[in-house]
Length: 309
View (spheres, rainbow, N blue to C red):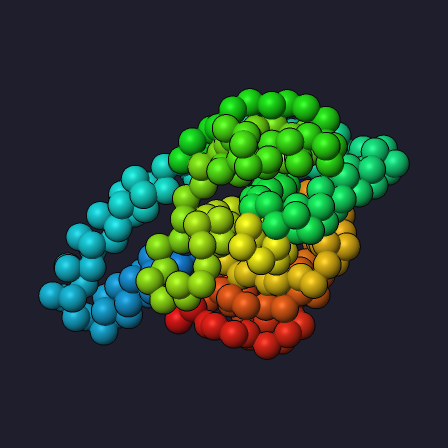
């Protein structure tokens, strides 16, 4: 009689192997998704969905039939609302998945010539320094290279090399584009006169003007760095992940900008604490209540003048 013991052992190994591969894929997908939404409004909504699911499971286990029935009707509606509210983010995420750089095959920015990168950063710092000296209002958005953003207004396409002269020209008070933001993506100034979504937090101090509110508003939802120069005082500030920090001089922004250039994002390829420690070299004026934990905030230098609660 043939011995099938080895055959069944091989089947068990195959089943276990498939299970492990599936678990790995699911864990990777969940981790990737969480890193993409960390620090955004989507994170809070996802947490709410998880809480509803946990309550639903607990009510089912405890045989609380009325609560279970209500929650079973609420969860699909909440999921549909999630899709509708975050339609732009979902579209952008699917577009991001469609590019091979999701799996790190696109090295266009990571391998950008170091001299070119250093020159671009130097031009940005030089422009910010001059804008601060002349008390010229400015708002510069430096994007990580993992996809375009949806702004309230796309602004005017520029698609030019980064230079301090061009940045100063775009923010010149008589320029028709000076009121909007300038967007920098990779090694290009891609647009000017861009209108950004402002934060809707009613507890934000009145001392922050339109540019600061727009910088905070964009950073609450998207990765990257928003640099603001006040036209009243010439003060230099930067917003990221819903936080606003003030810098005594433009050179302090060099390392946060370089981090974005080399890491590609402030959350994907490097620990969040690394970016926060660089970003926090300024004086933190506004703290986020989003995904940044207390231990992360402890790494930031300076005391908070105001907390968004």
